[in-house]
Length: 170
Image 1 (cartoon, helix red, strand yellow):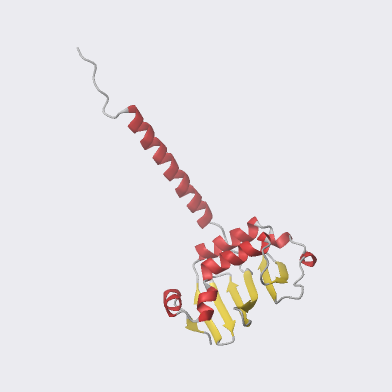
Image 2 (image 1 turned 120 degrees about the vertical axis):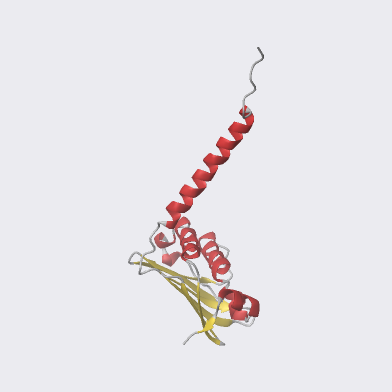
């Protein structure tokens, strides 16, 4: 009598179990992230200059993902997803932004930008040089750029404005 060959090879079974475990972890992570509540008083404000000839702007993001961009050319409004807003807030939290000493930052003689976060009845506003490379400021600003694409919107990029559904603010 010859031994029976298993229906599924052991290596193939191990690969399937590993893939299933990884997928379960990914699903659990996204379910946990999706359940995070964004406090209703959450507001992110970033203001400063864009471009070589300094053009003033102000970017405001509310707790529901409503974005307002005010600059020399006028005001624009659009909306980002709550998932994208959570992504930005995670970057702020990773940098312990609300715990920063606001007196440690000095705009110096350069153009001054201000980044502020209000969340859970706490407010931190840091005034800094617009070209700063400090990670506690540069990383949240980079996350804001990636999610809101405010520099392209302010520059009038028609494709980006169409993709984001930018409307003139009233």
